Amino acid sequence: MATPLLAVDGIIAGYGAAEQILKGASITVAAGEIVSIIGPNGAGKSTLLKTITGLVAAREGRIALNGKDVTAEGALGRAKCGIGFVPQERNVFGAMTVAENLDISGFQEPGKVRERSEALYERYPMLASKRKALARTLSGGQRQILAMAMGLMNAPALLLLDEPTAGLSPKAADELFEAIVTLNQGGLPILMVEQHALEALEISARGYVLVSGRNSREGAGTALAADPDIRRLFLGG
Image (cartoon, rainbow, N blue to C red; front, side, top):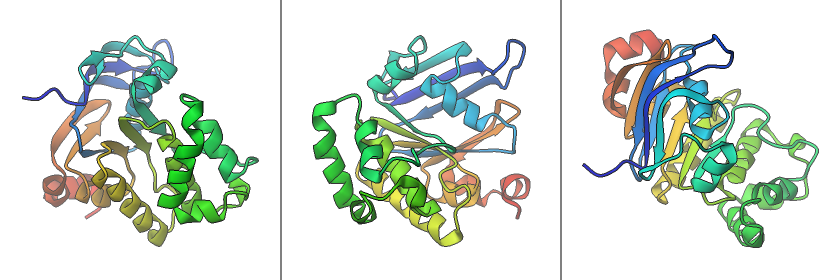
């Protein structure tokens, strides 16, 4: 079996000295995949993404990217290894323009900021038309596109998205899902935590169900979306 792009094995992590949110969670992401993590509130989904990015330290377990153990790396080290992250909240600088948000996000390779920002303006014409606008003036959907574009400025090998459609209208959420699929079709693997679990699973190659910090189920995204137990427990149907 080919080495997965991302391998997360037996992660135990939490925020306080005695608090344990993740209790042995394990996932993999292969090249070219969209993988979704679903589960009830408090299951540890966002904590798992933050642990993968190095924002939360793993107490036990191993995280490897392209076969390289990055468990001891901090957040900056993991970003340099190719892990990009778009958090759910405070993911843009509201008092800065769209252009400034993109420029500041290309910190790893300053010499490529202009080239990459221009490519993103071409990919997302809305950003080009609003490049001089303050980020706080954007609609919710526009802010999420900007946040995702910021995550792309360092050309990550893997993009992590935490609740990308949170707070968006149904139309804006659909448009964002389309943008995620288009990114993936261009070759970028994506690991996503998403509140709209059914929609996320339907565009995912595989999915994981996390419950109380542990793996509960995993399988093909469409198969999980169609499973009556999964729909009843997590999808409201």
